[in-house]
Image (cartoon, rainbow over all chains, first blue to last red; front, side, top):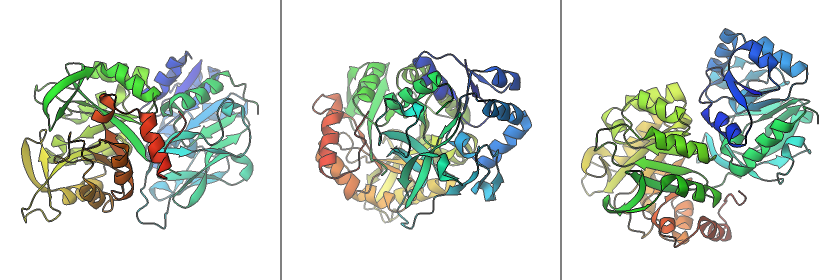
Amino acid sequence: MIAIIDYKAGNLTSVRLALEYIGVECEITNDPSKIVAAERVIFPGVGAAGEAMRNVGELEILDSMRTVVSRGTPFLGICLGTQIILESSEEDGGVSCIGLVPGTVKRFTPSDPMCKIPQMGWNTVELKKAHPLFEGIEDGSEFYFVHSYYPSPSDPAYTIAETEYADVRFTSVVGRANLFATQFHPERSGRIGLRLLENFSRWDGKC
Amino acid sequence: MLSKRIIPCLDVRNKKVTKGVKFQNNVDLGDPIEMAVAYSDGGCDELVFYDITASAERRPIDIEMVREVANNIHIPFAVGGGIESLDDMYRVLLAGAEKVSVNSLAVKNPEIIAEGAKVFGAQCIVLGMDPVKTDDPRFPSGYEVTVRGFRERAGIDALEWAKRAEGLGVGEIVVNSVDADGTRDGFEITLTSLISTSVHIPVVASGGAGTPKHLVDVFTEGRADAAIIASMIHTGEYTIAQIKADLVEAGIPIRRRW
């Protein structure tokens, strides 16, 4: 069973539907006991970092997240969920985040005034190292992105893949042991995204 | 590099995809779910559905259809038509749509855009606008916004409206040229470029797509971030793969694997 953490950060329907489509059992929940009991955990989210962190605090799900990540449960972050597992974000005037991976979240600051923010659409994801979640997915495949801020882990060891936008090559996939987190939306990325979710549903959390 | 998006538009009436010229003489083309799956498998980057009779029939959007689409495709899709309130937006997004498109409602009540963007996130809220060319000096951009399926003029300058909507927090603007709609003679390049170079959010060109060359033009001269196509694929004259091959050849960044 995969627990999809609901912390009032956007619409979780597409994540649930993608998992159901590939025949994987899942439950949307904010119950810490269910999160701790799950075989795998997905931490999705869209919206703003400040409000997301307030919700995480109010729902008291932080301890359960730390527990599952530290004991090796396969953990998948998506979009805002990926950003707020870093230590801090530039969004909303500066927000202190969960800190499961050392690093920060920065805003795109393109030199070209014609460069549109948010980045919205499909962009290529270039692997920096092989990872079980990319099994069967060609390097340089495209995934669907919607975001104005990007993850910047403090150690290149945490960068699984990179993507280029607004003059910057940013970390589009963050990884650390059993934690894997994408800035893009696998649930919206067609067959290739579904393949990544299938890989996650079988992953033992080891690299 | 970020790819330019190709977005098939499915106008839905009585649970069938339909297509007319300038909102008239509609003919039925097929089942929306089957067509959505075929286009998604065929390599489109996103889809948009308009429930074109919801407003006129004063009924809410067909949520069952939205749910069916969401169960069957796993790329982003937007839904418009018959959106009257934040509640309607919520229902559409909860049913699995990525984005909700508002048009006449936003003109009537611009604050709904700001509220929707605040509650659901800017990326969910798409402003659809249907500008028509005009010589009237009250509209300095040369384009006036129309509403209710081109039936009424809104008395608003198209460029001014686009900038205002950006300020209110929409995530994206679909610019559908009334003059080009359904003609298959090419996009309204001047209008698209004018809007796209004046706002800092993605702009989707709509109306007039007839050949792959039209898409090349709207992505280069027209500065569009995405383009809506309808008749040229609904009729079977082109496949998305054919269109994409031509765009790749012209050097346009395009998603090539799906």
